Length: 493
Image (cartoon, rainbow, N blue to C red):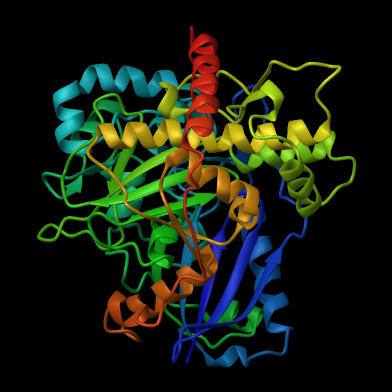
């Protein structure tokens, strides 16, 4: 039997087909080939059209089917991973009412701050493990306040993965994990956070039926199956946000295990068995994919919005047509510390670990007679790695002390230089695996459909392809990090 995984990313939709017999990747495809646009009608806003995700999903599935590497009729289950925290709202006819307000949009910060003051620190820390912040519930509250005519027509709120599942099956569900991403899950009552709903004046009818992450969220309709060349009745048996799904794809399921990713945003995601949250909401705690009331699994997430997007901006503005590989090679030729050039990569919305500040990306110490393109390329990667170190220090304040971090050999971890910088600035070894979000979603589908008896069975043959360890040059990296942190502290004043 084959499994289909769909990864609803910010830049593109990627799909993968996995053979359930051995969990090996059969084929992958993505659409579009170039990065999908993020619309910003005002500074700090970020939107995408949900119908574009659906169009890209259809194109991706048709593209992978056309590869000839498998029989699409052998696909027996579908899993979906998706960009977290995005808001999609539909009317009673399941028609989208406005563009999705996506994860890096910052418009609802003040809305969340007011809710935090109203609900109180004790309630938020014990029940939500978070401040309402700039998450999905606050985004809907912003719509209610600023676009009341649209809110009045709203029948259901959902996240991006819920929308794609709805398009495939005609059914609409959510999960505890999805609700916790929106800060709408009460960890103590193990249900919808009624106090948050009441504070924002939301009817509970806005919430779709709640089901476990690993369960049948609907079945592919005959019309959609014919359109996509699939069998009708295939279950969508798994839905998870991109970071919990990345953790799943790296077999990070138990307390103490930690995953990292460095795509458009950068994330360190640690699994804990304690219902605790950072008192300042610099890192956030969400329901992990295998959480239950009797077996607690909380994903503690550090997010850096400006990561791969910083690197891609540098490539676009200063790369002069170079590929990422060529940029990495030039950056590796520049000296450690980039001859004093320092880059703060925070230019993609409000950074939660910096108290939701919109500080923008910054370049410091530029010497026009000294610094060339390789210095800029390297300083960007050093700045991103230092941001990870800064965030890891916050995680350590919250009792998370990794001995090893697992990451997919993808995105910025394809760069040997970035991998070297990451392990040396954080002082933590990294195990690299061949994985991606769509492959993880496919394996999740197999677990949800009962094709695998457990995650342990699904990952029984999983092995790292490489191990990166810190070098002995600790003092040099420490000096560069202290310089970077000093620049950050001055910028925050």
